[in-house]
Structure formats: C-alpha cells, structure tokens
Length: 343
Image 1 (tube, rainbow, N blue to C red):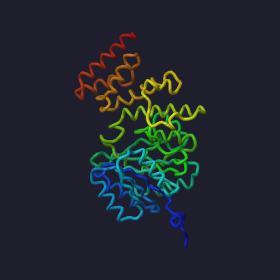
Image 2: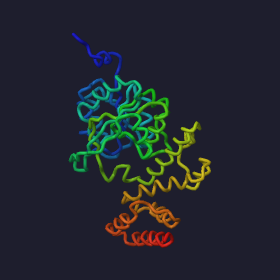
Image 3: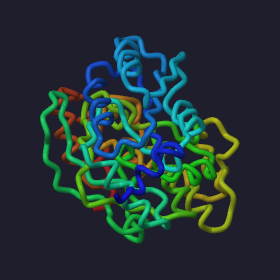
Image 4: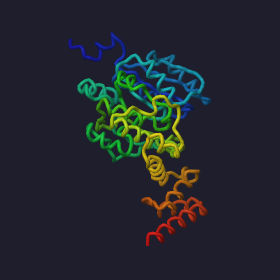
C-alpha cells in the first residue's frame, strides 16, 4: 500500500496552520468555517482569534470548536487585526500558514493544490490564487482579472498594489516570522507592507485556479478606510524603495505613520509627501466615502497647486450624482482654474 506524503505528516503534526481573526463576523462565519473544515486536504489546524466580537460570533465559534478538534480558539478583548494576526503566527505549529477571512469561502481543493505547489517549489515563500467575488447577498460574481502567475510579474505588479489576494495566500511560517510578521504602522495595508518586505527575501506568485470566493461589501476595509489604506500603502512603497537601495526600514520601531508634512524629512527626500498625497488622491477618485470625507480637501489642494489627475471630470459628475453639489462645484472651480492657468 502506498502511503501519501500527507498521511505521513499527520503523525508529526499539522502541515498547515489556518489563521483567521474574527470581529463581528456572524452573518457569514458558519459558511466560511465549513468551507475550511470540509477541505479535501485535512491535515491542518484551524487557529482562530475572536477579537472582541459583540455579535453571535462567539457562540458559532464555540459550537464548531467543540465539534472539531482541529479548531483552536482564542477569545479575548478587541486588539485589532494586526495584533491578532501576529498572535496567530506565533501560535502556529505548522510549516505553512493559510490565511482566511471570516466572510470568504474557500473552494474544496484550495489547500490540496496550494500544499502540493509549495512542496514542489521551495523557492516560493508566498502563494496566492485567483478568486471570484461574492456580493453582499452571497451571489457569485465571476471575475475575469488575474493575479500574476510568475515571481517576476509579481514584483512588477507590486508597484501598483498587492500581487496576491490576502485571504487566498499560503505562506511559509519561518519566512513570516523572520520578517517579524505584520507591522502596526501599516494598519489597513498590513498585507501590502508584508508582501513588499517578503519580496526582498523570497518569491511570490499565484496559482491560476480561482480557489477563493472573495466577498465584496461596503463594510470592508478597502471601502471604510480607503484614505488610511492608500496612505499606508504609499508609505510602505517608499520604505520598500529605500530598502532596495540598501537602507534599513524606517518603521520597525514605530507604532504609527507620520503626518504627511513629516514625510520629506523622515525619508530625507523632497517629494515624498507629494508622492503619498498623490497616491491618496488617485485612490480618492474611486471611493464615495473618501469623496465625502476630509480627504476631499487634499484633492482640491492638489488641483489648485497645479497638478490635475486622471478622471477629474468623472469625479465631478460622481459628486453631482451623489448629491454633493457644493463639493462638485468646488472641484469644478479648481479644475477650471487649472485649465485657465495652463492655457
């Protein structure tokens, strides 16, 4: 009888530690967890932090933990996602980490395909997959875009954003610990910062398979905290460029990000602040929440300073459609002034 590599590893501990932080995830939590517990690859531990949930998440988690010994549940007060993920990385017993978010759905063969690829490709430290989307009603929205499949393409991709979908990834535990895990200053873009630092010591790529159903909602971080996320991502990129030039990171000992006006001095580079502001404004075009928030003033100031942006007219129209007529007029006036000054 042939014994598979997976059954041999069961005698020495789990091959995969699934890590998931939960905060008020009750509406989607049961389906999410079942998609993990019913994976075809079974040699894993399921590490979960209930990060101070105030809904029914605790009851769901406790019931499922009582029924499946692979679940290890930590319940405590709220400390945030970065703290929770680092706690889970420290608790992991397996050589591979699989991320999961509590509102997504993993396809049944996700772990089997990712484990097989990681065993066959030891140079790959972080492996994601393509995804389909779920809307808030649970309907599948078939995606056509694809994440980069080769390490070289992933490195090029990182100039504009994460090369992998965070809840789809499988990672080598030793590498994530060597990097020090997720960093607090980059809250809301902690994954992008991690990928940038990882790219300096390992390869990153994706499987072509769509192994995750990724939920899109108005409550996800990329919508609720778009401004903070855009700023953190831009600063992370500047820190990455600095490290590529042979310097140490500026953020290993910091707990937060500096104000925009402090960035030139911090990076010892004229234009660092302008770069970050520009990246935030680029993101602002697509976020209704940011257009209604204080970041809007940054957009207007940038235009009045003589720097327009792609999609300015569409942004003015979007503001009008949303009933934000005063803001639409302010931005239109700034754009008109720029056109006149350039004519």
